[in-house]
Structures are given as C-alpha cells and as structure tokens.
Amino acid sequence: MALVLLLAPLLTGLVRKLKARLLRRQGASVLQPYRDLIRLLRKEVVLAENASWLFRATPYLIFAATWVAAALIPTFATGLYFAWSADLIAITALVGSARFFLALAGMDVGTSFGGIGSSREVLIASLAEPAMLLIVFSLALIAGSTQLSTVAAVMASPEIGLRVSLGMALVALIMVAIAENARIPVDNPATHLELTMVHEAMVLEYSGRHLALIEFAASLKLLLYVSLIACVFVPWGLAPLDAGPLAYLVALAAYLGKLAVGGVLLAIFETATAKMRVFRVPAFLGAALMLGLLGTLLLFVSRSL
Image 1 (cartoon, rainbow, N blue to C red):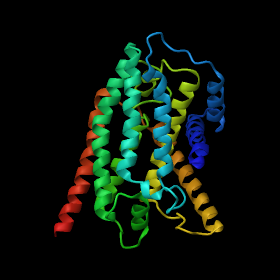
Image 2 (image 1 turned 90 degrees about the horizontal axis):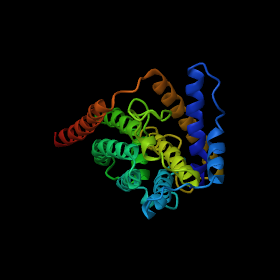
Image 3 (image 1 turned 30 degrees about the horizontal axis):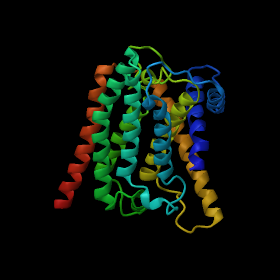
C-alpha cells in the first residue's frame, strides 16, 4: 500500500515530462506532482454555500477506494497478505464505486460544468464497465479464476502461448484504461475547455486538500491500470510466495521497469494522437466492448471444440 502511494505521482510526472520533451519543451520535473500535492494540502478548502455532506465526503471515498484497488494488484510479488482479496471483479467494483461518487459530487453543487462532466462520465462508464467485465470473463475462462495471483501464475506458465482471445483482451483493456483515466483521445487531462473536458469539469469546484485527494486518486488510478496490464499480460519477474529478499529486490526492479515502459508508451501515444470528439467516444468504447465479447466467444468456441 505504501509502494503505490510513493510511485503514483512519479508515474504521472514521468508521463508529463516525456510528453513535454516529445513536444520540444523543457517541461516540469518528474517530482512536480509531489510538490503540487503538498501545495494543495497546505491550502484552505473553499466550499460552495449549497454543497452538501456528499461533496465534502466524496474526495475521501474516492481516494480510499482507488488506493485499496491499486494496492490489491500484485505489483512485484504474489501471495502477499491480502492476495486472497485481489479479485478482478472486486477491483472493478471499487473503481466503479469511486466513479459513481465523483459523478454525484459533480452534480451536487449544481453548476453547469459539473453536470456536463458527470453526464459524460456516466456515458463513458456505461460502455467501459461492460467491456471490463468481458475482459475479466475472458481471463477467468483461461485461468479458471478471477484472483489476480492465480491469473498471473497461469499467464506466466509456458502452456498459455499466443492466443487471439488474449490479444483482443489486451487491446480492449488498453482502450478501457485510456477512457477510465481520461487520457487522449477520450479526454485531455491538461485542458480546461468546457466543450471537451470530462474529468476536470467534475472537480472544478474542489480546492485545497479535497482537490489534492482527487488528484492523488487520479494518479493512483493510472498506476492501477498500468500495474494491471503488467500483472496479467507481462507477469514475468513477479516474486513467488516466501521468496527471499534478493528475489523481492529483483521483482521490484522489474516492476519499476514495467512502469517506466508503460509511461513511455503512454506519452508517445498521447503525443502522436489527436483528441476525438465527445460524440465519437461511444464508438471507441464500443470497439473495446466488441473486442472483449469476441475474445470471450472465441474461448467458448475453442472449448466446445
């Protein structure tokens, strides 16, 4: 749990730095997200007059749910203390719960921007969550379990090999991760234009420590999906249960390398891709939904044969 807290802002800073360098700009330091969080924690919270208790409680709920979900994923080792609870369906439910409360908070104050952002967020969720569940079903059919340590062990075994259904699940998971983290081409995390923003529209009314928790949760969510892709589709280097200190150090170095590669690929993709129109997002997520469905159907057909 401490590891994901330490690495989440660093991954966000790495992506921002690489994007700036690819655009031939100097860019801020990779440690800038840590400074931003500290600065926001020191600021006073400004609340709207008509803000309810839900508006004040939502940042803590979002941060707690995202933190637990990110910590449950086997980052550098399997068989940890809470490995039994690292279930793909539970992690999907935690992320969905955080999104639900964020959408409610966006509408709580009654601003037009908050309502626009919440409606778009729910539209994205209505397609992203079914696609995620189909990906979970595909992995469960192959591994025989939705428990992540079991899935990672099965995926690392040599008898898995190359499968078309796994390729479809990987592409679908990447598309869902892009949409869930409000990244280009679905959303631009660096813009505040009311016609395009989704995530930023819901958090415009937040300030101080509340905004710090929401920004921290956004960084944790990005780390969550990069870790999930690495755990399921690149499971090599994970330390087994009761491994020695040297094995844990090697596994930690491998995990840091996977995060670095994921951050580099994300920065390159966002720099080379333009943001799509909001009305094209359902087609984008519909493609992810169909890929997940086709992967599941292929597994059913291959098993029946």
